[in-house]
Amino acid sequence: MKTFGGPVLFLDRSDINTDEIIPAKYLTEITKEDLKPYILEDLKLPGFDPKGPKTRNARVIVSRANFGCGSSREHAPWVFEVNGITAVIGESFARIFRQNMFNCGMAAIELPKADLDLIFSHAQDDDAAVNIDIEGGKLTMSGGGKEKTFNFEISPFDKALVLAGGWVDYADQKY
Image (cartoon, rainbow, N blue to C red; front, side, top):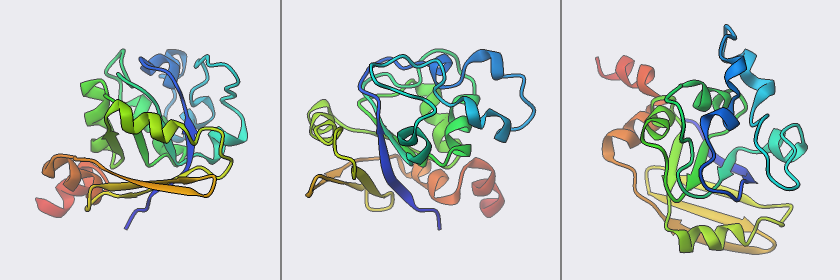
């Protein structure tokens, strides 16, 4: 079974769009794997390096509201998938991006702003990590010698997609 969680990449901004996640000029690539080096290439945030170790080592992204806005392309979740990202945590997601995450077997977890503020308090912790229990609807943020657990909800169907490994694996198991 797939493990959800790991080291965190903090992207402290709302409205991160699909062009910032994977620039449109790479949409002609033939395979998902070909997208890998271009993750978050056009994202501009103070101190952010898309080629740096925090990006390379991340398994979870924590951001703010309206993550994945812009176009409806599946390439945005795909670039996360091939880079080992298992979950994105934010206050809200663009509807199609959110569903594309579930369809690819990754978690899009919505939390209230107050919970995200607590999670962002770990942004400077070198050991910041999240452990996610999809079935139990809990995630545990750890770092800097502290730990806190948060509850979240994913619809039963979307949870089944994530646990199955995505829509194709779900369909193979059910039909």
